[in-house]
Image 1 (tube, helix red, strand yellow):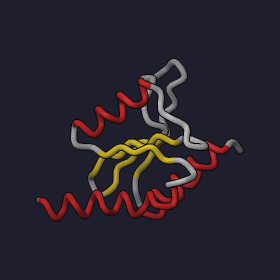
Image 2 (cartoon, rainbow, N blue to C red):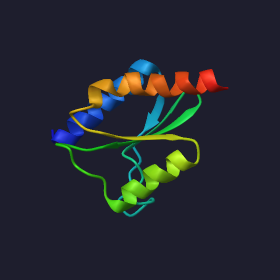
Image 3 (cartoon, helix red, strand yellow):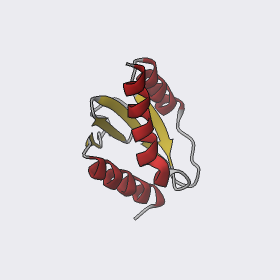
Image 4 (cartoon, rainbow, N blue to C red):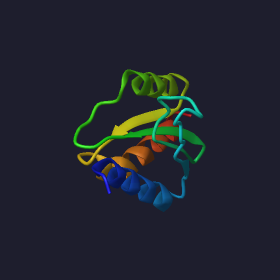
Length: 102
């Protein structure tokens, strides 16, 4: 299993533990390039999660998609081995912050 695949597996476990809906879109010429590795919905909030290994950086197209998600009210994040263990807390803080503001 590649380092990035290990990160993706951890992210999916976290999302499952939260009870979030999630999919891993396959682009490969059939979909839109640059879509985050994992697209999820948790308590009505749209999440775009780009998984990287070893501090990898997103491509310009990936970065643009993450920015578009954020600019339209969704949440986006780049996750690697250094921050994957904080993902559950991050997602819960997003939701709790929004609930407090509304």
